[in-house]
Structure formats: C-alpha cells, structure tokens
Amino acid sequence: VGLEGAQFDIPSIPFEVYLANMAGVTYDDAVSVLQNAIRITNDMNMHKQFPSVSDAGDVVYMARPVSDLGSSDTTSSWSIYLVPRSSNEPLFLTNGTQPQWIDDSRFLYIRDDGLYMYNIEEGHSEKIWGLRGVATTDMTLDVSKDGQYVTWAAPAAGEIFVLHMVKTLSGSDSFELYGVIPVSGWYPIISPDARFLAVQTRMVFHEKGKASLAIQYFDLKTLRIISPATVILEGVYMNALDRIQERDGSNVSTLGAAIIERLNPNHAILTDWIL
Image 1 (tube, one colour):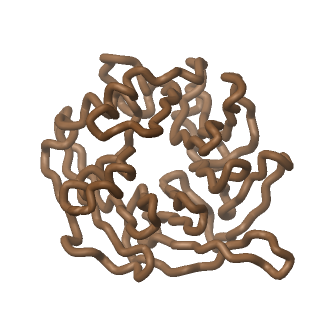
Image 2 (image 1 turned 90 degrees about the vertical axis):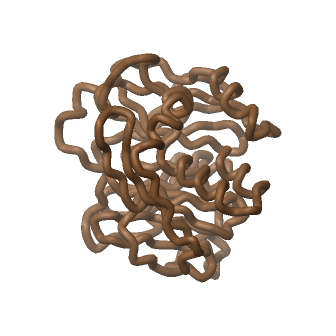
C-alpha cells in the first residue's frame, strides 16, 4: 500500500505491507475489512512488493532499497523478509523474488538460476528447478492452496510452466513438469480448489485511471482454455477498482479473479478466490 491520496508511478515510493484476517469474511464486507488492516512494516527506505501470508499468519515479502530502484533490476537484487506472526520485526532470509508459501514452514521463490524452496524451520534453501537462461523480475509465481501445483509465468519466453509436487524415493518433496501453456502472461493465479488458472495476458496503460487488459483462464488439469477464453476491459477497470487497489495493494490477478467470478455461475469458489 502506498501513500494515501498520492499521485505516483508504482515503483516511485516505498510501499508498506498490511495484514487483514479474511477468515469468514463475505464478499460484500471484504473492502471494509481491508480498510482496517494492520500495518506490519514501517521502513520508508525499503520498497516492498508481493507479500504472501501463510495459514499460520506468517508473512514473507520481497523488498529493495528505494535508493536502488533506478539501478539494475535482477532477482538477486531483491531481498526476501519474514514477518513472524509473533512479532512485527522483519527478518532477512535470502535474496530473490516472488515468495509464495507452499505450507506453514516452506515457501518457493525465484532466484537468478531457477526456482528455490526455503525451509523456515531449518533456515536454509534448496534449488528445486533449474533454468537454461537467467530468471528475470517480470516472472511471477503462484502455488495452489494444497501445495500440489506451482504456476510460473515467464512472459519473455512466452510460456507458463505448471509444476506438480511428487514424492521421491526418500520421501522428500520434489517437483516435476506437469505441462507448459504457450502464453505470454503475468500473475498466473490458481483457484482454491486447484481446478482453474487465470492469467493476465495483456496490459496497456492509457491516460490516468484507464487501461486495457486481457485475462485468459484455463482448466488446470488439462491446461486447455475455458470458454469464454478471453476477457477484455477497455478504459474502465482502473476507475472501477481504483479505491480497492489503493487500500489493499491488489494486483491485476485479483482483478482477473473478479472478472471470472462474474462470468462463472459457481460463485462460492470464485468468491473465495477473490479474497
């Protein structure tokens, strides 16, 4: 969340992280609950992005000094911090981007040479998926609620990788490639029941408060597009969701879920998805 009422470009100010308990909150009450979220960071020298909260209430996020925002932007130039549920004191863990919890003690993140898993209890990380090239900061991740699927969007490559958790002979967790979707996109969000995948495939900003975007969504098991395949909003979404975005830091993924909720009759699943 940025400074209230300020006019700014997204990377120009140090965003702070807020935490709200959304358990049992209805769709109609979501905005008021978010407006009363608790601020859990307070460092104007650090720019923070993509917080992820575990079921236990621990928060991880990526951050970078405001003074470095104009310099080279690589995954290793960002730091990942943990705010434990027992305190509001951020703890540095490692370097990387896009931290996403896989359970209450482990999260995935992107580093220059691949996908890593960090174990909070053991205090170390391991690489679980390598890259032939170098990871970039426009790559985005999501993990299914049950921790069984990982979606990894690589827009420069024009692909979204879907990984599936498997057990090794020793009983440890590993991942294998489930499939590849040939789409250039961002924010590959998985529904709570791991049935659907929503992806932002285009975003064009116009004058202040207006933008054009496209959302595609897929069956996660077959990786096929679900009809209607693409939702396009022209020039209205930034105005319609401007207040919500300023208050809770929502990104385009939330918007994609909101659009799909209005097209899909299964309201209960996708309302949970929005929250």
